[in-house]
Amino acid sequence: MSGAPVSSGFRTSVRQPVPSADVTRVTVVQSSADVPQDRFAGWWSEAELTIVRADLGEAVPELREVGDGLVVLGGHMNAYDDEAAPWLPALRTLLAQAAAAGVPTLGVCLGAQLLAVATGGHVQVAAPPGPEAGLVDLWWRPEAASDALVGPLVAGLPGAGDRKVSAQPTLHSDAVVDLPPGAVWLASSNQYPYQAFRVGSAWGLQFHPEASATTLRDWATWDGTVDTEAILAAYAAREDELVATGAVLACAFLDVVREAAEASVSA
Image (cartoon, rainbow, N blue to C red):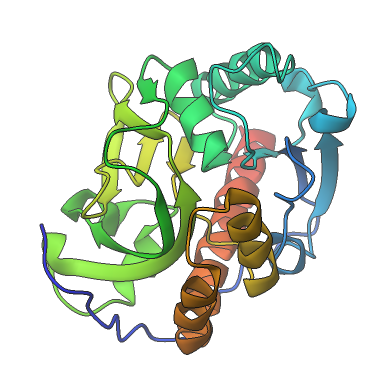
């Protein structure tokens, strides 16, 4: 799967979360000060979010404490950097437990890499293809069409099978190089194959659907090796599309969380 960037033609209607009389409780673990919820905060405004600032010394919760769903955001450390980030072992354990226990879980960038490692996959630090920065075209695999999280996004794209493509913001140098056993591979880019996957009840996204222009600027400035202005110009040219597709993914995750919570109550 390769070729020039393709305009997605994505339909901008956003699927609304499944209504629920009860408040949906989601725990969000943050590992770096400048890798926040960003647009997730607005998209999940109907949920009760508990933000755990692991980077500030707040304890990683136990599985029974996370509520209805779990989100693990990105960060500047790598997935094995336990010395610099001593909360990572507990976070990997939590991710493995959540994926196995049926707790809807979303790992973004570092969160996806931690999920892969926690469930038997492998991450390469400073992968040889080099940094992937700015907007990346994602090629959605046929398995994505029926997936609870990414299926609603894929349904709005033109094309068929592995020719469905959409753009998402990204900035990373480490990469998942081996998926966990039994994982479902959902998307790739021309540079790195494992851009989205599902293992158990958990999803890993190498890209950042939540990232705004302000956050991208902060990351590019911190990185210091990428063309910040080119990244921001590309983002501005497609911002409406990026916000629409990010919102679909965010609402789809909240749908999954609510449906799982309702099923647990009625069981």
